[in-house]
Image (cartoon, rainbow, N blue to C red):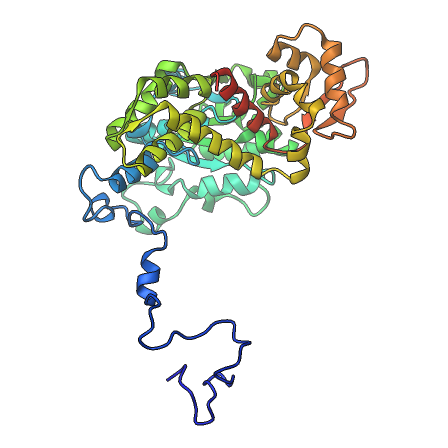
Amino acid sequence: MIFGKDRGGRTAAGTPSGDSRLPWRLPERGGSQAAPAERGATLPRFAVAATDDLGEAAQGLGDNSPARARLALADALSASQPVTSRERFAGRHDTLAALIAAIEQQRAHVVLYGERGIGKTSLIHVFAETAREARYLVLYGSCGVEARFDEMFRTFASEIPLLYHSQISPTGDETEHNRSFADLLGEGPVDPRELADLFQRIVGTRVIIVLDEYDRVADPAFRRDVAELIKNLSDRAARVQLVLTGVASNLDELIGFTPSIRRNIVGLAVGPMAESELSEILSRAEEATGLTFAAPARALILRMAGGSPYLARLLGNRAAGRALDDRRTSVTEADVIAGTEAVLVEWNAGLPRRVQAQLQRPEVRSAWNVLIAASRASGTPDGWFGVHDVGLEGDIADPAKVESVLSGLTGEIDLFDREEAGDGREARFRFRTQGVAQLLGLSAALARAGR
């Protein structure tokens, strides 16, 4: 036996059986300690299996069981992932219709822009599903700081079958059907003109290339090449259209001042959702889970979300989870408040201790209205904002007061970075620690709701 004693009274591990230095002791036979299987049964477990089959995942659960409702809730009100199917999509009907019209009727390239967490990626996923249903070939790429034009567009070309090339016969050599447009690109770096010449040969379908999170691209050459590609594709009437999405307050922030391609682009702003659209999100969740959001709970979520589908999903998910924990089918206002407070605690705990302490200082608390306005003004692609931006967001008439407060929080209390613009322009500020603006925004929303 592994843990038996040898003839010398020693354990198999070589330690005297009575040695008090053992970090644990074996249970005596016939003792009262719980068996390992019994102890393990008391530990937390997953509620459902990780399978794509809902019936298998919730096997043995009743139709109205909390576990089945929790499984549906994870899909219906997920705040950590974008919506990827039309069944779970709510609102944005006008924006989706405008996007489809720009692609189908105007044959234009499209730029979708708006604040963070406003639902751009969810919208683009649902648009892609709709386009594929209409037999478009949709290619999706998420941009990053290190994105390179040659690498990304070679990947796109590799996803376009050579079967769609005008010089390839559908009844031709079978080996041609297994190749892609990338096989026709040269060895050197791909440039916009070469790509446009190649894409001009596409027949039998139309191609939509989505560049999501375009605002994250740091390479000016990448942006310049994309603008040049848009112009060349438009000049050649190629059957390829680009859709760019990113964080921006206007079109110029995302694509820069490029007059040569303005006539080829349709800009669509994705703004805050109406309360009726946010309410639709909660109604979809009710249908999926069997839960009910009581009228006061629903109203509180809508007020605190402030047009953000991300916040509506997050707060709705947390509140519904608390109801399920108590095995209730009705989500109450108390669930919403408790769920929101739990989110704030988590977000605060994720900040450095230094920042947590700074936010509690009296001089910071006394500047709360300016801080809240700054959190709203910081929703720019790079996070920088000016004094007048804060004044507009907080309806503060005295810009000198705003600058004094912000400047006072960049020294010993280093909540902000400051950048001197020069040439008589106002200085710019940015929250030094990521996550502070989000925390302040939700705190303000809870306060506005009178909680």
